[in-house]
Length: 200
Image 1 (tube, rainbow, N blue to C red):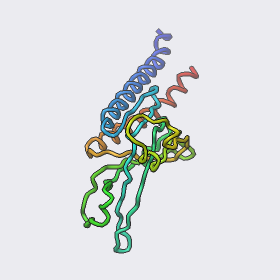
Image 2: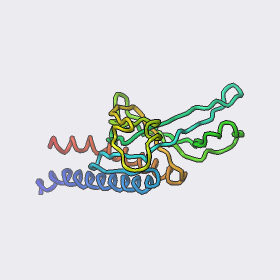
Image 3: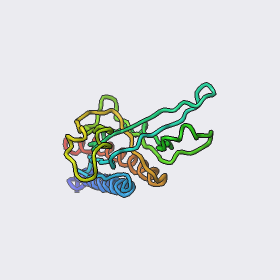
Image 4: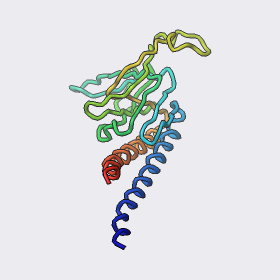
């Protein structure tokens, strides 16, 4: 009987780990579905995914009121793909903004206008970087239709501390961000438990 009680905490720990792993996988599947219109996601394992945005990604303009004037900030994330270990994400720094992708937006903008696209920003934990494949927007835009070699659009490897993903559907962006935040928290909660299990 004593041996049974000794093994019980280990069994409970394994059940919790299995439940967490299923929860992470379920959230990653939710992200895949939410991101369908913007690109694709490949799940490498229960902790890592590769995000491949549609190319070319839009140039996003974001208005900010500063000293009673509107200042425009422009963002472009020319990603062919980015490898994202969930444990490398700082879930507290994730954010989303409504942005404008129409080049004429700054001249037509009136205070209160909402952007046409939602941009989700993902930031790494301090000291962590994401492995990315970047491309040259101008080279890509000058290529004709059809398949092209990555060298033709200037694809290079890079390491980035943060990246942005765009969604034309606001609801899809919310669903993606919620699933990502939950997946990150679940993935991080597995690590201490796994260490404790391995030490038994």
